[in-house]
Image (cartoon, rainbow, N blue to C red):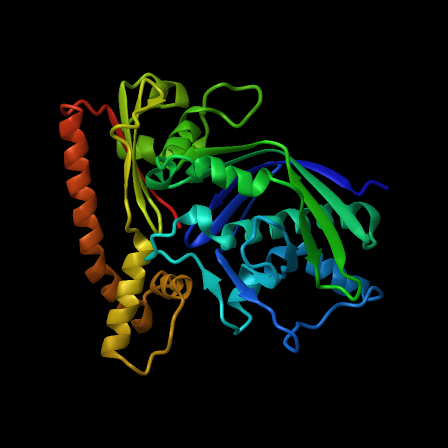
Length: 354
Protein backbone atom coordinates (compact mmCIF):
# COMPACT_ATOMS: atom_id res chain seq x y z
CA UNK A 1 0.00 0.00 0.00
CA UNK A 2 1.78 3.16 -1.19
CA UNK A 3 1.19 6.54 0.42
CA UNK A 4 3.76 8.27 -1.79
CA UNK A 5 2.86 9.93 -5.08
CA UNK A 6 5.07 11.59 -7.70
CA UNK A 7 3.38 13.94 -10.14
CA UNK A 8 4.13 16.42 -12.93
CA UNK A 9 2.15 19.64 -12.90
CA UNK A 10 1.38 22.67 -15.07
CA UNK A 11 -0.24 25.51 -13.16
CA UNK A 12 -1.89 28.80 -14.07
CA UNK A 13 -3.08 30.74 -11.05
CA UNK A 14 -5.38 33.06 -12.98
CA UNK A 15 -6.97 36.14 -11.43
CA UNK A 16 -10.41 34.65 -12.08
CA UNK A 17 -9.90 30.91 -12.31
CA UNK A 18 -7.24 28.39 -11.36
CA UNK A 19 -6.21 26.19 -14.29
CA UNK A 20 -4.08 23.16 -13.53
CA UNK A 21 -2.90 19.98 -15.16
CA UNK A 22 -1.71 17.16 -12.91
CA UNK A 23 -0.28 14.23 -14.84
CA UNK A 24 -2.15 15.52 -17.93
CA UNK A 25 -5.50 15.62 -16.09
CA UNK A 26 -6.96 19.12 -16.30
CA UNK A 27 -8.84 21.11 -13.66
CA UNK A 28 -10.46 24.54 -13.50
CA UNK A 29 -12.15 26.28 -10.59
CA UNK A 30 -12.57 29.84 -9.21
CA UNK A 31 -9.51 31.55 -7.74
CA UNK A 32 -11.20 31.95 -4.37
CA UNK A 33 -10.57 30.91 -0.77
CA UNK A 34 -12.60 31.48 2.38
CA UNK A 35 -11.24 31.38 5.95
CA UNK A 36 -12.96 28.94 8.32
CA UNK A 37 -13.09 30.12 11.92
CA UNK A 38 -13.92 28.12 15.09
CA UNK A 39 -17.63 27.56 15.45
CA UNK A 40 -18.20 27.80 11.71
CA UNK A 41 -16.66 24.52 10.57
CA UNK A 42 -18.48 22.46 7.89
CA UNK A 43 -19.92 19.10 8.87
CA UNK A 44 -17.51 16.16 8.52
CA UNK A 45 -18.11 12.74 6.97
CA UNK A 46 -17.70 9.70 9.22
CA UNK A 47 -15.37 6.88 8.17
CA UNK A 48 -18.33 4.48 8.05
CA UNK A 49 -20.19 6.55 5.43
CA UNK A 50 -18.58 4.89 2.42
CA UNK A 51 -21.00 6.20 -0.21
CA UNK A 52 -20.69 9.77 1.07
CA UNK A 53 -16.88 9.50 1.09
CA UNK A 54 -16.86 8.12 -2.44
CA UNK A 55 -19.10 10.94 -3.70
CA UNK A 56 -17.02 13.62 -1.99
CA UNK A 57 -13.69 12.31 -3.29
CA UNK A 58 -15.05 11.71 -6.80
CA UNK A 59 -16.04 15.37 -7.02
CA UNK A 60 -13.38 16.80 -4.75
CA UNK A 61 -12.97 20.02 -6.78
CA UNK A 62 -16.36 21.05 -5.31
CA UNK A 63 -15.41 20.10 -1.74
CA UNK A 64 -11.90 21.27 -0.87
CA UNK A 65 -11.54 22.10 2.84
CA UNK A 66 -7.94 22.32 4.02
CA UNK A 67 -5.70 23.62 6.76
CA UNK A 68 -2.27 24.84 5.64
CA UNK A 69 1.03 24.77 7.49
CA UNK A 70 3.63 26.30 5.20
CA UNK A 71 6.38 28.90 5.53
CA UNK A 72 5.48 30.10 2.03
CA UNK A 73 1.96 31.17 3.04
CA UNK A 74 1.66 34.55 4.75
CA UNK A 75 -1.52 33.63 6.62
CA UNK A 76 -1.87 29.93 7.40
CA UNK A 77 -5.17 28.56 8.63
CA UNK A 78 -8.23 26.62 7.57
CA UNK A 79 -9.66 27.45 4.15
CA UNK A 80 -12.46 26.43 1.84
CA UNK A 81 -11.03 26.45 -1.68
CA UNK A 82 -12.52 27.17 -5.11
CA UNK A 83 -16.16 26.19 -5.57
CA UNK A 84 -16.49 25.29 -1.90
CA UNK A 85 -15.54 28.87 -1.02
CA UNK A 86 -17.84 30.36 -3.67
CA UNK A 87 -20.84 28.33 -2.48
CA UNK A 88 -20.17 28.74 1.25
CA UNK A 89 -21.98 32.03 1.73
CA UNK A 90 -18.95 33.22 3.72
CA UNK A 91 -16.54 36.06 3.01
CA UNK A 92 -14.20 35.03 0.20
CA UNK A 93 -10.77 36.20 -0.89
CA UNK A 94 -9.53 36.24 -4.47
CA UNK A 95 -6.87 38.04 -6.45
CA UNK A 96 -7.24 41.81 -6.20
CA UNK A 97 -6.98 42.84 -9.87
CA UNK A 98 -6.76 46.52 -8.86
CA UNK A 99 -3.77 45.97 -6.56
CA UNK A 100 -0.14 46.56 -7.51
CA UNK A 101 0.93 43.70 -5.21
CA UNK A 102 1.20 41.17 -8.03
CA UNK A 103 0.43 37.47 -8.26
CA UNK A 104 3.77 36.39 -6.83
CA UNK A 105 2.86 37.77 -3.39
CA UNK A 106 -0.65 36.33 -3.14
CA UNK A 107 -1.54 33.37 -0.91
CA UNK A 108 -4.53 32.40 -3.07
CA UNK A 109 -2.37 30.77 -5.73
CA UNK A 110 -0.31 28.71 -3.25
CA UNK A 111 -3.28 27.59 -1.14
CA UNK A 112 -5.30 26.55 -4.20
CA UNK A 113 -2.50 24.47 -5.73
CA UNK A 114 -1.64 22.73 -2.46
CA UNK A 115 -5.29 21.81 -2.04
CA UNK A 116 -5.46 20.40 -5.57
CA UNK A 117 -2.33 18.29 -5.09
CA UNK A 118 -3.50 16.94 -1.73
CA UNK A 119 -6.95 15.90 -2.96
CA UNK A 120 -5.53 14.47 -6.19
CA UNK A 121 -3.33 12.13 -4.14
CA UNK A 122 -6.24 11.25 -1.85
CA UNK A 123 -8.38 10.34 -4.84
CA UNK A 124 -5.67 8.06 -6.22
CA UNK A 125 -5.35 6.34 -2.85
CA UNK A 126 -9.12 5.93 -2.46
CA UNK A 127 -9.59 4.44 -5.93
CA UNK A 128 -6.89 1.85 -5.30
CA UNK A 129 -7.54 0.99 -1.64
CA UNK A 130 -11.13 2.11 -0.95
CA UNK A 131 -10.26 3.33 2.51
CA UNK A 132 -8.95 6.57 3.97
CA UNK A 133 -5.25 6.99 4.80
CA UNK A 134 -3.87 8.74 7.87
CA UNK A 135 -1.25 10.54 5.83
CA UNK A 136 0.07 10.95 2.28
CA UNK A 137 3.26 12.27 0.67
CA UNK A 138 3.28 14.11 -2.66
CA UNK A 139 6.41 15.01 -4.62
CA UNK A 140 6.00 17.32 -7.60
CA UNK A 141 8.90 16.25 -9.80
CA UNK A 142 8.41 19.12 -12.25
CA UNK A 143 6.06 22.09 -12.36
CA UNK A 144 5.69 24.83 -14.96
CA UNK A 145 3.89 28.03 -14.05
CA UNK A 146 3.81 31.64 -15.20
CA UNK A 147 3.65 35.28 -14.12
CA UNK A 148 2.44 38.35 -16.04
CA UNK A 149 5.24 39.78 -18.19
CA UNK A 150 5.35 43.00 -16.13
CA UNK A 151 6.04 40.96 -12.97
CA UNK A 152 8.34 38.47 -14.68
CA UNK A 153 10.63 41.30 -15.79
CA UNK A 154 11.20 42.59 -12.25
CA UNK A 155 14.57 41.43 -10.98
CA UNK A 156 14.32 38.52 -8.54
CA UNK A 157 10.52 38.10 -8.77
CA UNK A 158 10.41 34.85 -10.75
CA UNK A 159 13.08 33.36 -8.48
CA UNK A 160 11.21 34.34 -5.30
CA UNK A 161 7.94 33.00 -6.74
CA UNK A 162 9.55 29.66 -7.60
CA UNK A 163 11.04 29.51 -4.11
CA UNK A 164 7.60 29.86 -2.51
CA UNK A 165 6.84 26.42 -3.95
CA UNK A 166 10.24 24.71 -3.78
CA UNK A 167 11.49 25.87 -0.37
CA UNK A 168 10.78 23.23 2.28
CA UNK A 169 7.80 20.98 2.86
CA UNK A 170 4.19 22.18 2.81
CA UNK A 171 1.71 20.46 5.12
CA UNK A 172 -1.92 20.25 4.05
CA UNK A 173 -4.61 18.81 6.32
CA UNK A 174 -7.79 17.58 4.59
CA UNK A 175 -10.69 18.37 6.94
CA UNK A 176 -13.71 16.72 5.31
CA UNK A 177 -13.58 13.55 7.40
CA UNK A 178 -13.95 12.67 11.07
CA UNK A 179 -10.24 11.77 11.07
CA UNK A 180 -8.32 14.52 9.26
CA UNK A 181 -5.74 13.43 6.68
CA UNK A 182 -2.26 14.98 6.66
CA UNK A 183 -0.59 15.44 3.27
CA UNK A 184 3.04 16.56 2.90
CA UNK A 185 3.87 18.25 -0.41
CA UNK A 186 7.35 18.89 -1.84
CA UNK A 187 8.42 20.46 -5.15
CA UNK A 188 11.62 19.21 -6.77
CA UNK A 189 11.79 21.54 -9.77
CA UNK A 190 9.75 24.67 -10.55
CA UNK A 191 10.04 26.60 -13.83
CA UNK A 192 8.50 30.08 -13.98
CA UNK A 193 7.87 31.54 -17.44
CA UNK A 194 6.26 34.74 -18.71
CA UNK A 195 2.56 34.62 -19.47
CA UNK A 196 2.03 34.89 -23.19
CA UNK A 197 5.43 33.41 -23.97
CA UNK A 198 4.52 30.07 -22.42
CA UNK A 199 1.20 30.14 -24.29
CA UNK A 200 3.05 30.63 -27.57
CA UNK A 201 5.32 27.69 -26.85
CA UNK A 202 2.15 25.69 -26.23
CA UNK A 203 1.01 26.50 -29.77
CA UNK A 204 4.26 25.20 -31.22
CA UNK A 205 5.26 22.12 -29.24
CA UNK A 206 3.21 18.94 -28.90
CA UNK A 207 2.26 17.54 -25.51
CA UNK A 208 2.51 14.03 -26.97
CA UNK A 209 5.78 12.19 -26.42
CA UNK A 210 5.93 10.86 -29.98
CA UNK A 211 5.39 14.23 -31.70
CA UNK A 212 7.64 17.29 -31.73
CA UNK A 213 5.16 19.83 -33.10
CA UNK A 214 1.54 20.44 -32.26
CA UNK A 215 -1.02 19.35 -34.87
CA UNK A 216 -4.30 18.75 -33.06
CA UNK A 217 -7.78 20.29 -33.23
CA UNK A 218 -6.63 23.48 -31.50
CA UNK A 219 -6.05 25.04 -34.93
CA UNK A 220 -9.42 24.12 -36.47
CA UNK A 221 -11.08 27.49 -35.87
CA UNK A 222 -7.93 29.33 -36.94
CA UNK A 223 -7.80 27.36 -40.22
CA UNK A 224 -11.48 28.04 -40.90
CA UNK A 225 -11.22 31.76 -40.14
CA UNK A 226 -8.13 32.22 -42.33
CA UNK A 227 -9.18 29.80 -45.10
CA UNK A 228 -6.15 27.55 -44.53
CA UNK A 229 -5.98 23.92 -45.59
CA UNK A 230 -3.66 23.01 -42.75
CA UNK A 231 -1.40 24.51 -40.09
CA UNK A 232 0.71 22.94 -37.35
CA UNK A 233 3.11 23.98 -34.64
CA UNK A 234 5.92 23.53 -37.15
CA UNK A 235 4.40 26.18 -39.44
CA UNK A 236 4.16 28.60 -36.53
CA UNK A 237 7.79 27.95 -35.55
CA UNK A 238 8.90 29.02 -39.04
CA UNK A 239 7.35 32.48 -38.74
CA UNK A 240 9.84 35.28 -38.13
CA UNK A 241 7.75 37.45 -35.81
CA UNK A 242 4.66 36.23 -33.95
CA UNK A 243 2.62 38.52 -31.68
CA UNK A 244 0.33 37.05 -29.05
CA UNK A 245 -2.18 39.14 -27.11
CA UNK A 246 -2.95 37.29 -23.88
CA UNK A 247 -5.96 38.83 -22.14
CA UNK A 248 -6.40 37.89 -18.49
CA UNK A 249 -8.51 39.24 -15.64
CA UNK A 250 -5.76 41.40 -14.14
CA UNK A 251 -3.37 42.04 -17.04
CA UNK A 252 -3.06 41.92 -20.81
CA UNK A 253 0.28 40.47 -21.93
CA UNK A 254 1.85 41.20 -25.31
CA UNK A 255 4.38 38.56 -26.27
CA UNK A 256 6.55 38.59 -29.39
CA UNK A 257 8.56 35.59 -30.54
CA UNK A 258 11.36 36.04 -33.05
CA UNK A 259 12.30 32.70 -34.62
CA UNK A 260 10.79 31.01 -31.49
CA UNK A 261 12.83 33.19 -29.09
CA UNK A 262 11.16 35.82 -26.84
CA UNK A 263 11.90 39.51 -27.47
CA UNK A 264 12.04 40.87 -23.90
CA UNK A 265 12.66 44.49 -24.89
CA UNK A 266 9.30 44.53 -26.70
CA UNK A 267 7.26 42.08 -24.60
CA UNK A 268 5.14 43.96 -22.08
CA UNK A 269 1.91 44.04 -20.07
CA UNK A 270 -1.00 46.37 -19.50
CA UNK A 271 -1.94 46.30 -15.82
CA UNK A 272 -5.64 46.06 -16.58
CA UNK A 273 -7.70 43.07 -17.67
CA UNK A 274 -11.24 41.81 -18.01
CA UNK A 275 -11.52 41.54 -14.21
CA UNK A 276 -11.08 45.31 -13.88
CA UNK A 277 -13.70 45.80 -16.58
CA UNK A 278 -16.14 43.49 -14.80
CA UNK A 279 -15.59 45.31 -11.49
CA UNK A 280 -16.29 48.64 -13.21
CA UNK A 281 -19.43 47.14 -14.76
CA UNK A 282 -20.58 45.93 -11.34
CA UNK A 283 -20.10 49.43 -9.88
CA UNK A 284 -22.09 50.96 -12.73
CA UNK A 285 -24.87 48.38 -12.39
CA UNK A 286 -25.16 48.87 -8.64
CA UNK A 287 -25.08 52.65 -9.13
CA UNK A 288 -28.15 52.38 -11.33
CA UNK A 289 -29.81 49.63 -9.27
CA UNK A 290 -28.72 50.01 -5.61
CA UNK A 291 -30.98 47.12 -4.60
CA UNK A 292 -28.45 44.74 -6.18
CA UNK A 293 -26.01 43.54 -3.54
CA UNK A 294 -22.31 42.76 -3.76
CA UNK A 295 -21.48 40.45 -6.69
CA UNK A 296 -18.30 38.44 -7.25
CA UNK A 297 -16.63 38.88 -10.64
CA UNK A 298 -17.15 35.19 -11.40
CA UNK A 299 -20.90 35.43 -10.66
CA UNK A 300 -21.36 38.56 -12.76
CA UNK A 301 -19.55 36.94 -15.72
CA UNK A 302 -21.63 33.77 -15.46
CA UNK A 303 -24.88 35.75 -15.50
CA UNK A 304 -23.72 37.88 -18.45
CA UNK A 305 -22.88 34.74 -20.45
CA UNK A 306 -25.94 32.76 -19.37
CA UNK A 307 -28.30 33.41 -22.27
CA UNK A 308 -30.87 35.78 -23.74
CA UNK A 309 -32.96 36.48 -20.64
CA UNK A 310 -33.47 40.09 -19.57
CA UNK A 311 -31.05 39.92 -16.62
CA UNK A 312 -28.24 38.51 -18.77
CA UNK A 313 -28.79 41.13 -21.47
CA UNK A 314 -28.65 43.90 -18.85
CA UNK A 315 -25.38 42.56 -17.43
CA UNK A 316 -23.88 42.27 -20.93
CA UNK A 317 -24.90 45.83 -21.72
CA UNK A 318 -23.05 47.18 -18.69
CA UNK A 319 -20.05 44.96 -19.50
CA UNK A 320 -19.85 46.06 -23.15
CA UNK A 321 -19.98 49.72 -22.17
CA UNK A 322 -16.90 49.25 -19.98
CA UNK A 323 -14.97 47.09 -22.47
CA UNK A 324 -14.26 50.08 -24.71
CA UNK A 325 -11.57 51.29 -22.30
CA UNK A 326 -9.64 48.02 -22.45
CA UNK A 327 -10.08 47.69 -26.21
CA UNK A 328 -8.57 51.15 -26.74
CA UNK A 329 -5.55 50.32 -24.54
CA UNK A 330 -4.94 47.07 -26.43
CA UNK A 331 -5.24 48.82 -29.79
CA UNK A 332 -2.69 51.48 -28.83
CA UNK A 333 -0.21 48.91 -27.52
CA UNK A 334 -0.49 46.82 -30.72
CA UNK A 335 0.20 49.95 -32.79
CA UNK A 336 3.33 50.59 -30.71
CA UNK A 337 4.60 47.03 -31.15
CA UNK A 338 3.95 47.11 -34.91
CA UNK A 339 5.98 50.34 -35.12
CA UNK A 340 8.87 48.81 -33.16
CA UNK A 341 8.89 45.82 -35.52
CA UNK A 342 8.57 48.02 -38.63
CA UNK A 343 5.28 46.32 -39.41
CA UNK A 344 6.97 42.93 -39.78
CA UNK A 345 4.49 40.76 -37.87
CA UNK A 346 3.85 37.45 -39.63
CA UNK A 347 1.14 36.13 -37.35
CA UNK A 348 -1.06 37.45 -34.54
CA UNK A 349 -2.82 35.33 -31.92
CA UNK A 350 -5.47 36.62 -29.52
CA UNK A 351 -6.13 34.55 -26.40
CA UNK A 352 -8.63 35.44 -23.67
CA UNK A 353 -8.37 33.61 -20.36
CA UNK A 354 -9.76 34.04 -16.86
